[in-house]
Length: 450
Ligand SMILES: *Cc1c(COP(=O)(O)O)cnc(C)c1O
Image (cartoon, rainbow, N blue to C red):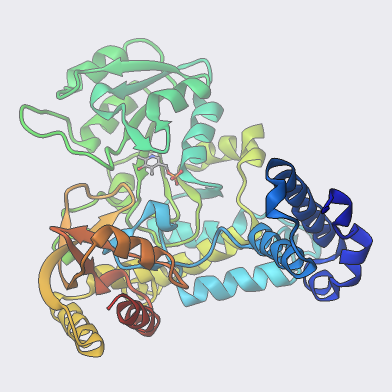
């Protein structure tokens, strides 16, 4: 009669696990063997007639645990969706120079907070500040962890327990739970809403500014549009009214383009330079949306205000790390050197012409020996330019079951993320960074499913 006592002991199993111990370390291997034995015991108790697993089976089950426990969950994917700033897929892929700068900062000691000329402690804030000053003409700048923390920090430092005036047309939710009114509450600022959902007038601002206020906040609507019976004053007019009342203006631009998106046939996304030219006192924007850099929040504007923000305790809590600062500085340099369109992947993708993309989709069709090249639309994404599309060409593949095929694509190494429209698989070359890897994966998948 088989009994649980016939299971091998942990010591016996460890004797045979040299290879696993070498690869995964002894403590983890021990844990995997224990789990496997526990499972075998439970199975035997539930169904004794099935017997006990052999030594080989136990070892291979333990190895499966070890593979699963150590598998990476954050790894590269191929973005064939045509959405350039795909938030779920990590927003902006970085430029070569940004990657090099981040790697160097990560693997070496650095001048992060060290002033080489003086041989003493320096500030981590200098690295991106001078480039931002030169690029935008702003008096001062500050880089923090992301734009959500930039907004929270500015409000906390300048407007805690004070009135902040914002139009009802701008009380937006950006996504991932970032709601402008909630962030304002969190900072301790007193939200003063003016206007209606679709209309706000200068007189609404004027009226609210009759009582003392710390800030007027303008939040870019980023991910949606108000159309129809609408009205909103120009930023410059809002700034004038605020300044007459001696109240500074914060413009949360969200994406924060430094170049004009209209050049690529898209709507014009407001730029950082335009906000500053309109007289705004502080502008904040993301590092990893249209800027095309690593995750960061960037604040530029008046020196006296930025100095106050830098000194607030939250500034330390939301500070940017050395790799981020290195990557942001390198990304900003591309703009300064007027090479952003060539060097920064998101701008390179935006600037691809329909003709260039059609050629690539055609080459994919040739390589795979199937599919059609059809006209379609790419999107900017990342909560910028809602409903704005870039004309593109895609490779369209008709498969038996698109849902099954999508799943198979996700199981590729690296996984491929594509779109389905009218039961057809669509692959947009615009956002694919490496055609060969995509094609070799697609080829084997198509052979397998034939
Ligand atoms: C995206 C966005 C944010 C949040 O920026 P993160 O960098 O994602 O934290 C804040 N405000 C606006 C208007 C945005 O579009």
